[in-house]
Length: 241
Image (tube, rainbow, N blue to C red; front, side, top):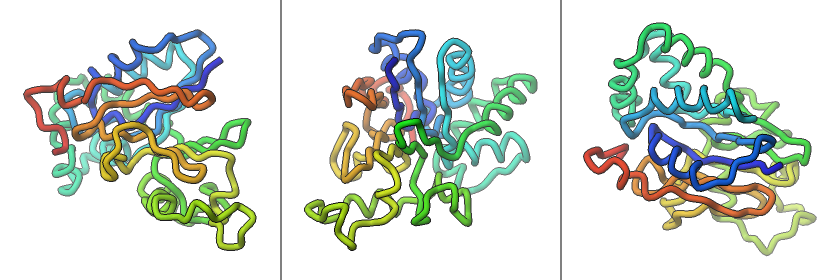
């Protein structure tokens, strides 16, 4: 059994299909998606449809991203948040205009059943963005922080990595888990295009919404598979650029 973690997709279904096609998938493999399935490239609704069907044959855990919540609010409550529309929402609206009401209801159900975080039996934490509570994401006063927070990633990016876990200055929230897997903040912002590890945090958002590829990583072996740069698969579009 392998466990694969998949980075932010942002409507790039062609990239998702391409990178999954580069894996050797077994029936007992597990797939953990870190969220942001929508908003960016033109196939947001199609991406959700694909994931629904993919989960019927594979063991999947789907985490909630901030963009997934925004699309849910649009589908469920007709919320046309102006900031959402400026950051990929327009492409999702257009994509969903092609779906029937019945299909939209199945997508609403999918979005309602996303997990805010997941902790596996090896004490590895998976969530879209981060957490601030020193006792863990399950104790956040504002539960939506887990798919909006950037401070966890900013902290590990700037940490003095010579400081040991036994040092009093070592961040307490990092001691809670053996490993932490996140997306949300593209590693392309620090000039990288593959998943990046600082301390015990892995960021698997490799900028698929912009100029980067979509990445899949085996969390045990740390082997990485990537799609082509997603913009090359949508040459007539701008994504979230």
